[in-house]
Image (cartoon, rainbow over all chains, first blue to last red; front, side, top):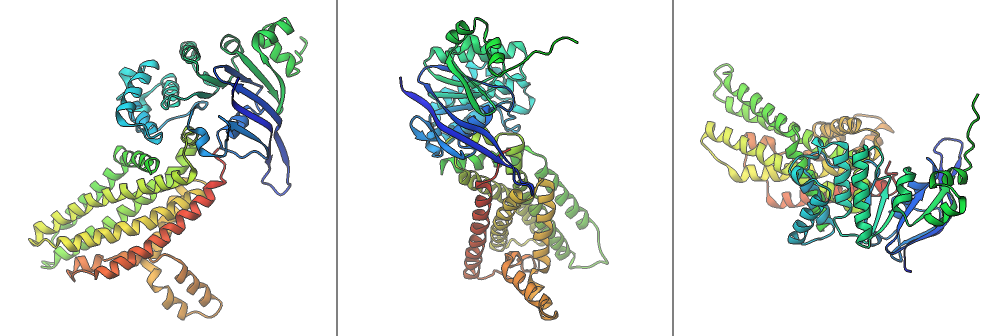
Length: 251
Length: 258
C-alpha cells in the first residue's frame, strides 16, 4: 500500500529561553506511516508529543532532525499541503464572517473556480448540517457548530488526507456523535484520516490502526483488532498498560 | 496572488463589520459640524479653520484606523488559532504578511475615501468651489503614507507582546514623526556630540511621513504639488514599506505560532 504520510526518525527539541539553556526533547526518533484509505488513530497522554507531531506534519515547526513526508513531498514545502484537510483542536474561526464566507475564503486559497466552490460549499454545509445557519456570523455559533464549520473548512479542497487534532474535544455527546458520523462517512468515501484523540472508545470504533506514543517515543503501532486481541482487553486498558499507568490502591 | 487577495478580502470585511471605523467617522463629522456651527469673532475666514480642523481629524482618524487594524491582524490570528487552519493550507507566512498588509492598506484607503468625500462636501457647500484634483492628490499622498504606517505596524505586531502596546507605541512614533520629524536636523545642530550624531542618525533613518502631509496646501488653496515630486515620494514610500514588510517576514518566519 502507498504511504500517504510518513515520518522517519523525527526528532523535535524545544529549547528554553531563560539564561539556563535547557533542551526538552518532544519527539524521539518517531517513525511511522499511514496508508491510503485507512483511518489512523494517534494516541498518547497529554504532553506525549501528538500535537508536536501534527505541527511538524503541517510545517508549523521544523523538525530538529529526521524527515516527514505527505504524499512523498517534504512537509517543509507548502505544496505538500495542497491535498490535505486539517481540523485543529477547538479553533475560533473569523467571528465577523458567515460560514459561507469562511468557506469561500478557503476555496479561493485553493484556487477553486467560483461555480465549483459554490457547489462544494452547498454540499459541505449540508454534510455538517449548517445549511440553515450559513448566512449567520460565526460569532453567533455554538461550540459544536463552530467545530462543524471547522470540519467543513477541512474538506473544502476535497482532500485525500484529513488530519484531525482531537476533533471531538469539548463537544457534547450529540456533537461527538455527529463528528464520528462524518469521519465514518469520509472513511466510506475512501479518504485517509489521521486523527489524535483521547476518546479511546471512539478510536476503537473508527480506527483501522493506531499508534500510541508516550514522552515523544512510539510505544505501539498496530491494527486495533490485533492489539485488543493480543492484550485481551479493550483499547483503554491496552493504552493504560502501554503508557505504564499504575492504579493507586485505595487508602 | 490569489491567496494574497483572498486574505486581503477578509481584512476588508473585518473593517466594515467592526465599529471602529463608524465611530471615528461619526466623531469626525460631529466635531467638524459642531466647530462649523460656532461663529468665532465674526471671522470671515472661519471656513479655513473648519477645513484645518476637519483635515486634522481625518489624519488622526486614518492613522488610528490603519494602526489599530494592522496591530491586531497577526496577534488575533494566533490568539484565536485561525493561523493553524490557514497555514495548514498551501499558504506561506510571506503570503500571510502580504495579504494582511494589502487588506489593511486597501481598507484604510476605503475609509479615507469616505472621509475625503465628507471633507469635499463640507468645503464645497461652504466655499462653492471644488478643487477635485487637489483633494485627489492629498488623498493619494495620505494613502501612500498609510502604506508605510501599516507596514511599520505589522512589524510592531511581531515585536511587541500585545496589540494594545503596538497601537500605543506606533501611534506615538507615527505622530512623533509627523510633528517632529522635519525639525530633528535643526534639533541636532543645537546639541553637542555624541547626541548630535544620534539625532542625525534618527533623522536619516526614520521614514519622513511629513513629506506626504499637504494639509496646509489644501486648507489654504495653494494648488497642486508637482506630480514628479509625488512620484518620487511614492518611490520613497515603496522603499520603506518594502523594508518594513521584509523585516516583518523575517520576524514572523521563525516565530512560534502559539
